[in-house]
Each structure stands twice: as structure tokens, then as C-alpha cells.
Image (cartoon, rainbow, N blue to C red; front, side, top):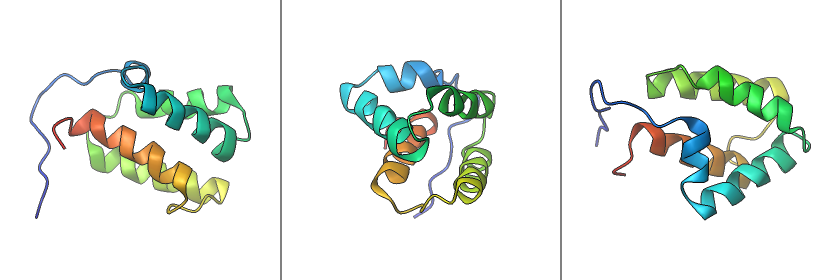
Length: 94
């Protein structure tokens, strides 16, 4: 099954996305704690890099590069939680 991205739909900001669901706030906080050693500024800087990206593939490429740079296992609970929330920005109905 292929998931196609809706065309020219306005995207919610990443900050609004995380704040839109209490479970996602928890996932964000766990990602900051575990993946960024509690460094909120570093996490926010990376989210700012993703913010202007309009295409899910570009976001995933950037996330994978960030995980490689930081030596983060992509299948870790926190990494998966982060990518799951970001995915909802591009595909809210899934």
C-alpha cells in the first residue's frame, strides 16, 4: 500500500502539532530527554530545521541523517515516537 501526501494542504506548525495531544507532549518530552540528553535548545533547533519542509520524504531524510549524526537507533521507542508524531503532520488521517 502506498501512502500519498495530500497536495497543497496547509501544515500545522510542529509546535502546535506536539501541543495538540497530551500523548504527543509526552513523546516530545521523552525525545528531548533520551535523544537530546535533555537539551531542549538542540531539539528545538532541529525542529526549526524541519518546520519549512513541505514533503514527508524530505523530513524523513533529515530525521535519518540526524539520527545517524547523533548515533540514535531508529527503532528506539523515543525515535519511533518522534517520527510517529511528525508523520501526523503530513498525514493527519492515518
